[in-house]
Amino acid sequence: MVTYQYRCASCGPFDLALPMGGARPEESCAQCDGTARRVYTAPSITRPGSPLTRALDAQEASGHEPQVVKSAPPAPRPAAPTDPRHALLPRP
Image 1: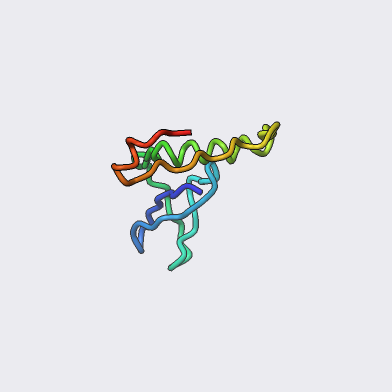
Image 2: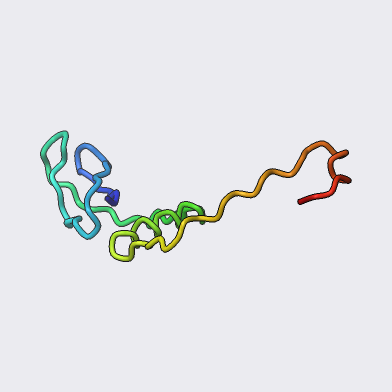
């Protein structure tokens, strides 16, 4: 949904959330039911962060390009000891 701005001659400006490309040159005002003309403003362009972009791209691609698992993931390695004295012990 895109937010479009309209201006009513008697009530002033108001915003409408419409599908992209669904804005008409004139809409009816919600308060007075008069005719409101569309006001052309600068676009509000924001860029989401890269983790969000990757997640959205993966979600979109999963519908037509699902990832197929061919084998089980490797077993996790045991955690390294946290005691510094253990660092000198032989490792298996």
